[in-house]
Image 1 (cartoon, rainbow, N blue to C red):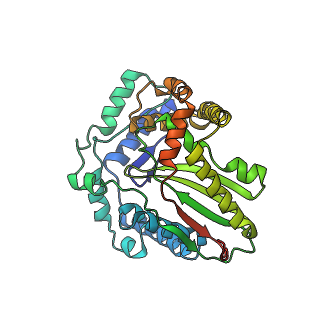
Image 2 (cartoon, helix red, strand yellow; image 1 turned 60 degrees about the horizontal axis):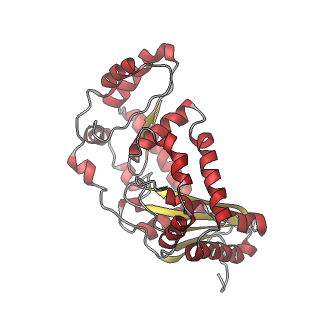
Image 3 (cartoon, rainbow, N blue to C red; image 1 turned 90 degrees about the vertical axis):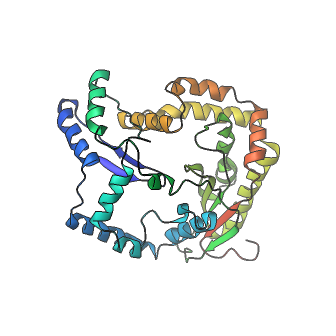
Length: 336
């Protein structure tokens, strides 16, 4: 059984042996409805978190992430560190945690998925047992405290200097506004047509090139991250820029589109349906995105219907936004 906090939600999960499900559900019910915030445990977790914050003050990647969030989101809550600060953590009491639980744990906004050895009737009874005591709605203040829509700001270049020459790599990120996560429009396929092959396979410039979508409730980003030798950083960044620019202006080729479609369709079971836990997590995400109970069956057909014209139009709209660039590592020189 575990719980985790994200920017927009709190997640929980539990795995159990079906023969012991009654005892397991009882433990989860206690955790959800009547959590204990013993002072000794609160102090221990606070100390661990503060130690991590102190260590991150000397970590170039952590420093870069802080600058990145602040540059993109300014004073919006998304700019803040999820771990808090030494000052904010020092002021949190067990009573504060209890008040937070009371204000935020409610049945509205609750999404549940269960996979495994249990029938529908038994599951319905168990869910009533688990969550029936929760309030119907969370406090209004809790619901609205981070509800304003924002978009990543285009701030040009950011720099986080660090002596990484001994390791020999530089990292950089670019972000662009994307469409809302709840839409899950198949035209987002364009964002999977990344600079990976051009930078890593053809040129051999990067140890790794990754692109991914960051889907927040109130904002979205498209990021490209690379790691390369410091003396090839300018060239690598230039190629990444050019590939994204070409996609925005001309779109992909038919062959690139078909390859991306095949990957998106074929990789889905391996990435999302490889275990009971991954299936349950996927089912929760489908609820959060309001995609419908039959989305897994419809997904391949939706992707197949996307045409080259669809993707070119989406590329022009999505990839032409002003970019933000973060550079971590030694200075790139006048040309960087």
